[in-house]
Image 1 (cartoon, helix red, strand yellow):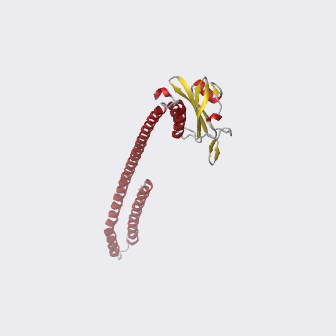
Image 2 (image 1 turned 30 degrees about the vertical axis):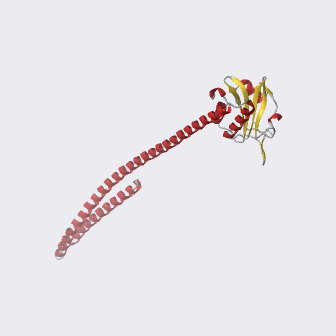
Image 3 (image 1 turned 45 degrees about the vertical axis):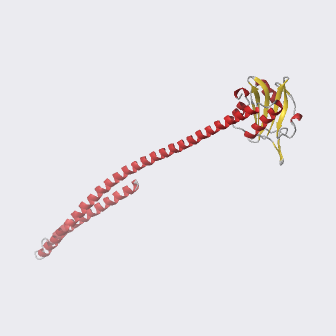
Length: 269
């Protein structure tokens, strides 16, 4: 029941009360008119008296009806006020329930995020242990195994590994490239993006590539990568190489930081 229905109900009760009151007035007026018309008629006095008696006998019915109408109006107003209060209480209860549901949903999402974070931390620790084992390989297999492992877990489309020796960065391993690593150039420190990463020991991320010179090749054709990430491979403070990975789908900032972290040999040895 809404406020509009309450107003309509009260209005109807008031109208009934007014109609009954007007009916009583009409009844009394009718008596007065009858008396005025027959007052001087001696012969019709018995008839007038008899009519007055019948009218007065029926007036109690009108009084009862008025009393009932007044009671109904009062009850209607009381019910209307109670319904309004009940409606406000229901709104408050529903509002609190929605808040509780929202908090429960947030708690569920928070628990899921915690579980995901725990899973990611566990996976990261496993990756560190795996790369620790790879780092025990000799140079001939180390770069190829490292490049292949990181390319798979980060879903790289292709990649190259460079070994730092004699102040130069030599290509030493490739992953899913159109040519053997021996076909790629050697870089001085500071030369090109690979050389700049070797010189600064800081990663470089290139997004939104639009060059045909850098493509990821598959059996179905070639695709231009969306992102290239170049990170230094370090052991302690020493540079031992550079890793260059191309991606068809850009990595998140968190994944880029993980990739960079996994290439820091001092933290996994």
